[in-house]
Amino acid sequence: MKNVTHNELRQLWRQFYEKKGHAFIGSASLIPENDPTVLFTTAGMHPLVPYLLGEKHPAGKRLCNVQKCVRTGDIDDVGDASHCTFFEMLGNWSLGDYFKKEKIAWSYEFLTSPDYLGIDTKNLAVTVFAGDDDCPRDTESAQLWQDCGIDKSRIFYLPKACNWWGPAGMTGPCGPDTEMFMAANRPDCKVGCGPDCRCGKYLEIGNDVFMQYNKTAEGTFEPLTQKNVDTGMGLERMLCVLGGLKSVYETDVFLPIIRKIEALCGKTYGENEETTRAIRIIADHIRTSVHMIGDERGVVCSNVGQGYILRRLLRRAIRFGNKLEIPSGGLCEIARAVINVYKNVYPELAQGDGKIMAEIEAEHERFGRTIAAGLKEFEKLARYQVGDTISGKACFRLYDTHGFPVEMTEELAREYGFKIDKAGFDTAFVEHQQKSREGAEGDFKGGLADNTAQTTRLHTATHLMHAALKKVLNDENVNQKGSNITEERLRFDFTFGRPMTDDEIAEVEKLVNKAIEANIPVTCDETDVETAQKNGAIGLFTQKYGEKVKVYTIAGYSKEICGGPHAASTGELGQFKILKESSSSAGVRRIKAVLVHSTQHTAHSGG
View 1 (cartoon, rainbow, N blue to C red):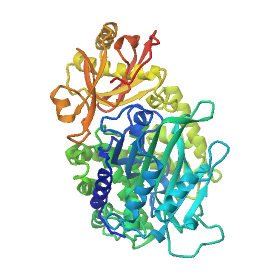
View 2 (view 1 turned 135 degrees about the vertical axis):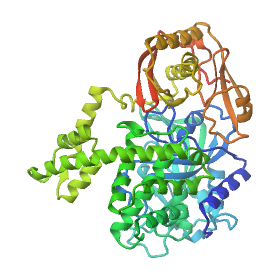
View 3 (view 1 turned 60 degrees about the horizontal axis):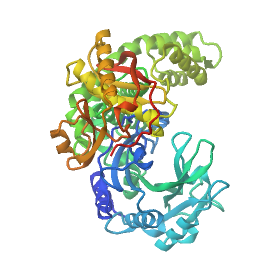
View 4 (view 1 turned 90 degrees about the horizontal axis):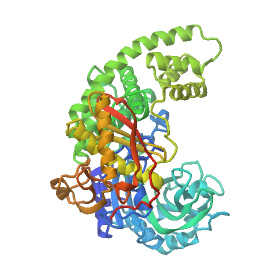
């Protein structure tokens, strides 16, 4: 096996798939656009949903990249040897081009060839879909692995729960997957030991998803017209495997960060369980926070949505930093260590150094005030607590009144010998959101990924509104910070430092409706980033220079780099109406708007 650095692994992945005819595309933002089902990009396929559904990608049918991802479902598990909130996913895709035969052969070649990872075939095992009443057993994939050189005894058939990739929502592309595992050189724990066993002998290192079905609203599985392949391989986990390491925190993406923490606190990683756990939590949470704040759609701390997750991570890092007696300003030094690790891969981090440090410092100061007040209240609560469980309502009062995170209440309760009613807190939190109509409404209704005619029209309307906002507010720094679209409405976040006036809102509506009444065709051109910029297209320009992009133009009104889909003409949209303009977070405003009496023309993907 090759023991490679994180930079070398990314490069090997890119070289291999470019040789197989794949275009290398840049990592998308951590903040999904128009996908209300998730707060963050959790896999490489999320930004590619429109293309998996059939829209043409400007770079072609074969793609590869390294996607930055965040998963927050197991924040409380961070501190062990393997859990991370931020990670990078090595990915490649076939959009209706090659399928199982080529993909399995290439996965095997990348893993075993001495020119790439050089893993001994004897150390590999794979799983394939066992089949059920919905879809047949994947004997084809099993045979293809055998043809590559994987012994039949190391090919395991597993059910949907293990070897099936389903849509993020209730419907959409899905299909069987085949997963690759490193097998430790030791006997089976029992008869039937395999990759689905929890003994630790088998470690997943990658998977190939074969999207060959569409799950309908009725729960049936129909063959897809366009069959796709989606491959994912975790960079940190693969570094750990190749280096023969016991923990991802021993890889070279973490070690410089950990060395900085050691220097600041005077303690050594590995000296005892408590110190090691605290160092891992700080390293992980600051690494993730730096990527969130420094992202092109950068997050700031708040009490809802992505901002709440950022606040939770930073405050947990602060608390464990205090336990290690890290001096004031230390978290910013750790953040700079993170930037140094990634600055050549994600230059936006170095470019955003100032805003990253400012947000960390501001949250540290805010949390200091919160801690003082919240700890005092918690101690009162603990002093008079009857029984071993603190009620959900009491936990929510600490959160709502004093900004005290429920996770911290839970950790403190544990230290005092109590537990908390987390379900009761969740209920109180949801009731509060419903009353105040904050952030979460519509978050799980399905968004633009559903690709319906109405969501397509609403998406097109955001282009007109974006252009109108720049004109009415007379500020070229008015830029999109986020978008969320459901069947019922659009939600659009943009940078602006004050509330809009009633006259400004009315003027934006007027300009958008004027464009709709003009029934202007929506045209699409494919070009490179440099040409798009020269021609006046707006966009985040997160793509690498030289990459092909789609530019959607509504003549006289809007020209934007975007992935689509879009209506054929503005006349399809109907009447545009702004329902609400409000604050989203510091320096960011939020508009909610609808289209009424829209026509029922068939929308298309524009070009």
